[in-house]
Length: 486
Image 1: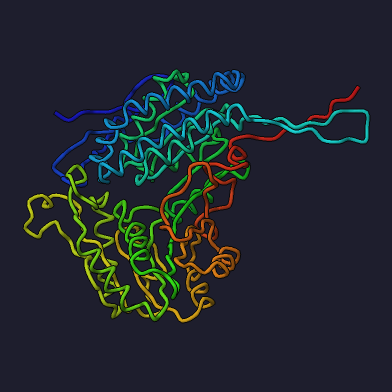
Image 2 (image 1 turned 45 degrees about the horizontal axis):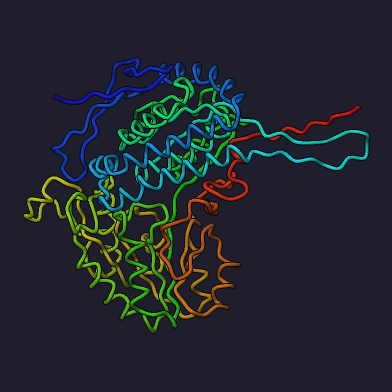
């Protein structure tokens, strides 16, 4: 019997107003139906906004210790249930159990980080010529809409919801329709931790309908979104001019290998960045720019490493790469491999559909072998367009100047990594590249939860940075200046 799940609106679990549902299936075996979830619409959005709007002022008036305590308790609950939630994450999104456990455990750290931020919402005082005291207050923005993607359904949501709650806001949460169960689990944890039930609404559904209704609702004070540039652009067009907006979007991230690099280290860095998480990370390595003397050897060694990857269901021991999360993304990735061949590039290894290769383990899942593509023409689409899968395009360069131009030759500017031991090149590259995250001798993936996160160009709208850093709470608070006279 199909398990039917519910929205959380007005402090209660309920179906979508119109009664519509959508199915959630296991990407490693599409015969496995995880459940049916509400396909929400404008009526559900209106009910959620009305309730959260009425609930957040009391939460804002609560002491910082009360808000912090809820997040600390949520962290403890997540930590206790990490293995259980990780197993569900693997079943729903496809990543390996190791990757899922890492994400689940990171949520506890995220909640603790933002619990601390609730206690650090400080104002400032300013010198004044008059006989008065001038100071600033930080206050919540109101109702924050949180719209998150499927590739990190726990961590992306936690690093948006937790600071919103810490600052005293109410939240309308719309998780991806690809990973609705993870969105539900996160809400359940926060409610168990003692969050006022009417402060947080969970709206499941397809983005084109419910997401549009959320962003266009006049009762929304702020929208924080992570997803594609195309959707982010539509949100920017839809929201009111006085709605605060934070957009984290795509990436076309490069690893640059200079001539002095250690080859084994470079290959290890690239394969972790390109094929970890099935290449489905916004910071994933999609391009490799390599000094020409190392080009042939690096292509050969990276192809050999990729060819040894064990692909399969993330629940199996020894599996290094799980399935692609959706059938649509599966078809898209395969189409880009076909585009590369049509352009005259050389597929050194991989890029093959494994669903029909005779292996019963892979027969019903979205499995693709990791692809290494070389000898691309300069105008290749694979060097510029986001693929979002285990496909890496390799291109040679002759000088650092050329490498810097090629690295920035896309509409995105999220993450870039440099493999070298030459400090002057590192310092120059870090200063001049148009990327928000610069890694040295490490993969483009993997970021510290207490460091600012965000990109340049089409990767971000350059609102206050996500995650840690001195400005992390700027998006979730308004600053009011007070002049206190005698």
